[in-house]
Length: 156
Ligand SMILES: CC(C)(COP(=O)(O)OP(=O)(O)OC[C@H]1O[C@@H](n2cnc3c(N)ncnc32)[C@H](O)[C@@H]1OP(=O)(O)O)[C@@H](O)C(=O)NCCC(=O)NCCS
Image 1 (spheres, rainbow, N blue to C red):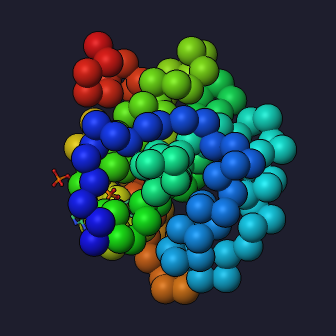
Image 2: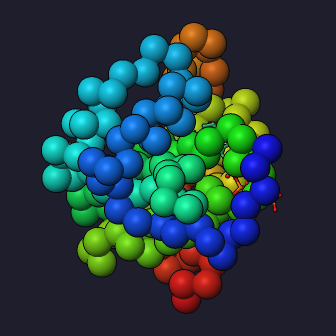
């Protein structure tokens, strides 16, 4: 694992310059993932995506669909850089950077994804409910969570 000084992590909007790094992170996290989705993100006006960079390289990525409110669609940190506060910093800064009209952020997460659930709880997300058998391969329930933007730590 690479030891990273969080002060040197910069959160910035996802751009074409980050495609190679983010592709590499995605391919280690998602089976059968294709670059098409990422390029689609760049083209889609409703999609707001951010990266955490370290020494000029993207080490984490997150993506929202933001209309009146926002949905966190995906977040991942490079497997070699995890558990150092990078996702927390990325999510915090990204939520602050979302359009001012966005009041709340919702998400669905696999009930067995303890790392992500703990991250979201730490950020101030609250559980709204459960969708049974929402996921397949492997089958799992979805936990639905919500954060009221003013409720994010340090943003009051
Ligand atoms: C979930 C994920 C993004 C966390 O990234 P990260 O950079 O390692 O997270 P951070 O270091 O910022 O952790 C912040 C908090 O999240 C929780 N957390 C993170 N990883 C955890 C783990 N493996 N087990 C339990 N809690 C965990 C902890 O509460 C942690 O705070 P702490 O270290 O003070 O205890 C990362 O594990 C990942 O990329 N997973 C694969 C993709 C994924 O499942 N994404 C979510 C669904 S889209």
